[in-house]
Amino acid sequence: MKVAIISYSFSGNTKRACLFLMKKIKEKSINADVLDLKPAKEEKAFLLQCRDAFYKHKPEIQDPAFELSAYDFVVFASPVWAFTFAPALRVYLESVKDLTDKKCACFLTYGSGMGKGKAMEELEGILKAKGGRILFSKNMPGAKTKDKEYLEEQFKSLIDIICT
Image 1 (cartoon, rainbow, N blue to C red):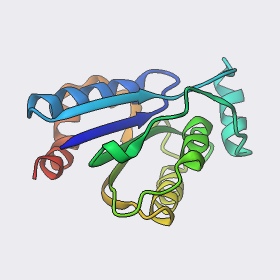
Image 2: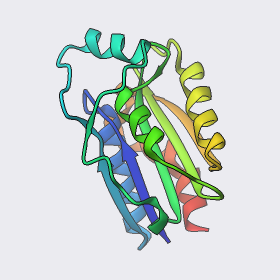
Image 3: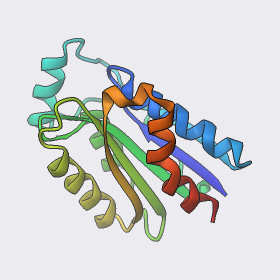
Image 4: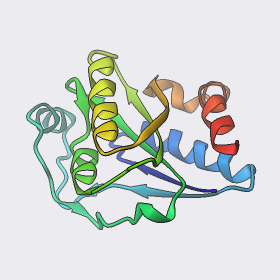
């Protein structure tokens, strides 16, 4: 089993959750790699990031090539901004040609929680349209990503799925 965790994080909440997940997967002797998506030119202000998300701007991302065919399971993660997920993940997903029968999971971190359901529905829709089999999805408050017990509880079922 080989797992890819593909994410974008601005404040560090999503990245913290991804690193926790990677550590837990590796503790089960499963190979896991993390790809941090980075825009070539990134807005530094949160409100400008939200504007770009709302208008579905498509920034150029650094090193967007990441071959998914070598992975059995792919996890996609992003913060929720303006009722959707981060533009960097959107651009990456557009570059993915096919996820046919690929086991997938996704999770989103959020601040206020406004729009988290819409954002998840959109992300799941894109993954399904590319043929992905979504076996896990979760919305999590970003502030809770510092709580290891909380993350353990939230990711338990995902780790069980990956390990079976």
